[in-house]
Length: 186
Image 1 (cartoon, rainbow, N blue to C red):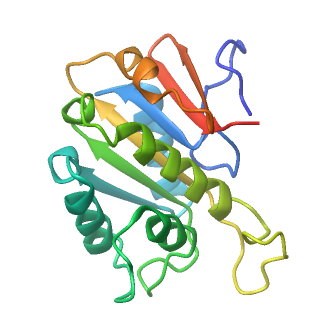
Image 2 (cartoon, helix red, strand yellow; image 1 turned 180 degrees about the horizontal axis):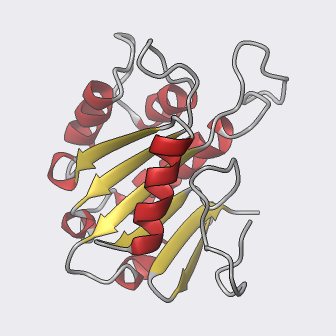
């Protein structure tokens, strides 16, 4: 994992299968824009945008993810099902390509009760999708690992404001400069 204090290195790499899995960044950030462009234009990856206003309740969040990422009909509209479906993206639209899901106007989520759980779930899903083994530790023969990351773009609230709200025993939260990054706890 890239350390936030390593000179000359971005604190996150959206084209790599490495932590951090979730990034909070300011709107208009040049590093983020460059990495999203490389993912999409040079690497043939996918960038999917979700408006934060559709993620303010768990119910609307599940619907937005299911619609935007074309989850299968059996998606259970709960946190465990979200992990499972994000780990195993379906449909011809995906084609085992790397993906970044960008949550626009993340400021709207700063005070929602489910934010820490939501970010933890995204970390769990990305850790599984980025791995060459399945949840049971068996080698994935059905599909390769993909680079999967989640980016929360903050319009008016500095990303550092999110750091204290994301604290959970199952995630590591780092804050430095313009970014907050979240990974599965070691």
